[in-house]
Image 1 (spheres, rainbow, N blue to C red):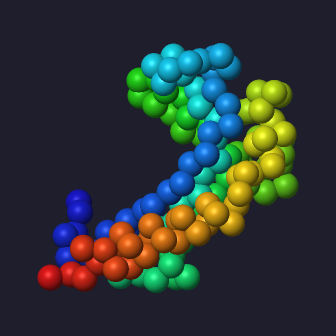
Image 2: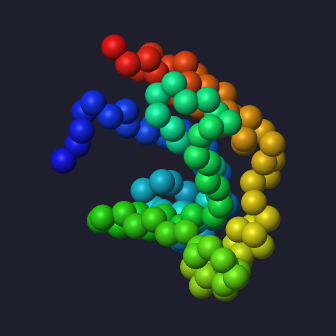
Length: 125
């Protein structure tokens, strides 16, 4: 059951792909699996960015029916988990992270402030 009196977290993300299966896919319709980095921030309407919950890392999205999303297991087996889900040609990119991590965080911060901290639904009526 959903309690409509309780604010619901909202989320903003930036995703930067670094590979696909098949590797030579030329259109989105051809892609069966996408490999990417993601950075997301979540919070209730009115939450400041510094108080938001943030998460980032590599992600594997299998575009089947239904779609499947996987992230590496955290902890001491992280690298092995990542290698088990990302093919060898993409592993270095998966470990490297975003091309410009500072710009990505700035974009998430701007979007979070505009849509969640100060967004039209940020103040309950």
